[in-house]
Length: 389
Image 1: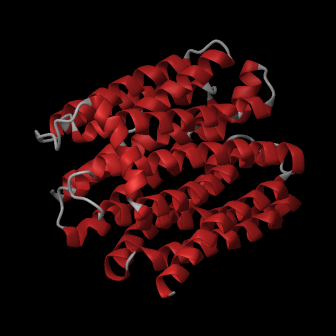
Image 2: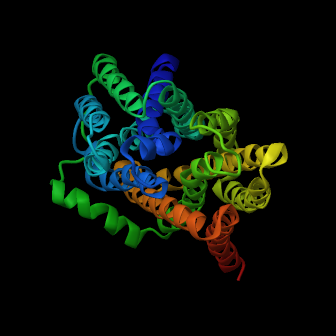
């Protein structure tokens, strides 16, 4: 694993993950362009996350069964086709369906993560995983900034079509750069699909990591799935580009995750998880002031989302390292169980966040964030007490 290959794979993670997140910045433009209510347009975000959860369950186990190079290149190609279809969608129904399809196919990062974990020494696994996650974060943030700016300048379709072209470029680049590899198992595909369920039943540490990430990622998705409605609504009256700029401010999270990986390598996952859960609750308290509008409200949104993003991403590093340590030969299937649960939590959080915003306003979204973080914290406290009793 050379440094150049490590960073190319980090960029690939960012491009793939960005396809799930860039619709968050353009949902008001989708609503305007297709002449549908804003809360209905926000479902394009849920569509991508539901598709991503399905893709993780259905396709990520193939990382243990199919050589990495053809698998990753094929998924990028299919992603590019799905994005092009979304870009030409004539109405909400085809756009929603294409969004689900893109989510299913763009599950490259959960395949690259276990691949990299198997290519580096155990003592460097946390740092390498943190680098992959930094790439994913960069894609998440820059995709929202890119789509918000391009969507305002051109049209809501333009980000989909540009992302399609980028996916095709990555398919070619990785086909040329990745070395040949041997599969870890010869299990049949049905057995591979059942294996994550068996691992969830057999591994309590996997279940704990899944619950933590589902709740914290759900809280994160609740905020980012509804903040466009706040910023483009009557309180602020900004355009879609403002959502992208808010995401860009949070680029500091890219530097935090490699540091979190090194801390996990030295001290373990649990201390990092605890700090992250408390930070999410603190972020929700700060975010409530965003409902007031004005300069003060905008500062609260910047600070709150920054803390929320850092906490979610650093918690993901901690949970991933705990999960990877369970087996050297089942990482793809372990990651399938973990990421499926995480994105189910994200899809539920995104949907509940929009519903909370419509019913109770921005403070309702912040209350939902606290509730989800408290669920994770309660499980963590119960686990620590069981160790001392």
